[in-house]
Image (cartoon, rainbow, N blue to C red; front, side):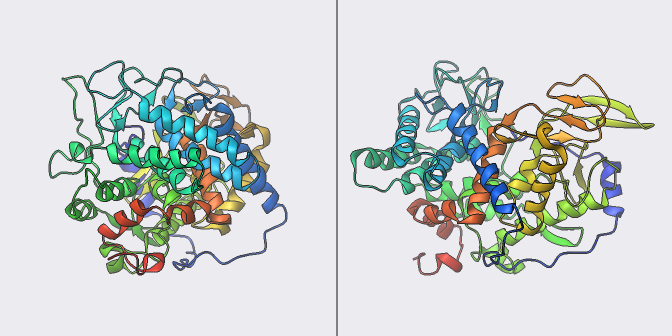
Length: 483
């Protein structure tokens, strides 16, 4: 899996649980955050951050096939999930005047045509996918499977979310926009969801064509980013999964409390963000959340606040952590190994699913701006000041051509050989890559906060509405839309 989930070090977990909570901010209601007069420079900052992040997708994608690199500037291969974020980003560029509708339409159509025509089959080479799913990573030029990467259910889902968004956004009568809608619907209808529901333990995460690997052990169990996967699987008009799949998934949730915030727990913040990029969960609830008295939006707000409180408490003493420097999620790290710093042995990681939850702490001092950026709508009063402070404090070391570089680590401030990026003596380690799946939530969740574009467009998708209704969601904007 792309977002590998690793066990926390037990002693660190104990240290976290033993630490008392700071003052708790009052939870937001399920309604939209109240409009506030922007702080001086806030609007200009968000404008600049969104434009730079949009340019990542617009400028690094292959125009001929729409494939987006997993990361830049190295561009080793394309990430199909990053393509899903890109397909959602292009209309944001249209609405904000960065590209015109025709430019975006051409790019989207090229992308959808590629994925529809890309070869599918059970072979290990020479194909891009199988049974409507696609391989996690594809070669940038040919679009064929990259090395031995897996056929990925979640990455295909994130691609499909962008596909369905494009189909809902381009609603014009001309031939090109009609073709976009037809291709979007066809790509979704082709996906064989039951193929990955192999037993009663949960939908499988991936499949390899190599006989000795096939379906891996990973299953979608416990609250995480796969909410949207389950909803699209339920809603399929051709290969649906039954309502029992949602009930089975929700039965594996883990409810807990962290720094005074009671919520469904999942350590890295991406699990609290990805589904929310496309679906407005404010005011709509399934059976589980009705029993808890909140919705999934409020749940993500609480998870966001808990991470900030963790950084303020800073139980493990990482340098730089505080009210405006925080955010743990999957991201690059400096290197894998241990290093003694100020008389203390510290363990560092490369790419790792960092996060914090009760009894599950994954922290090596590495902060990812997308953790705060992808949570902007949930708690704008703390996420936007954090983004602005990180930009101000670390300047060009952290903020460049395409906005925030993927990650940084203030604890690692003495010269050392690293796998990614470099150490700025006395300041910290800074990544030198932008990652598509971390860029996407920054751009799109800020857009949802500012005007709700992605949410409002996706409310027009009959597939999304059907999936929510089949999962038992009611209330709010769904009122009267479920038969």
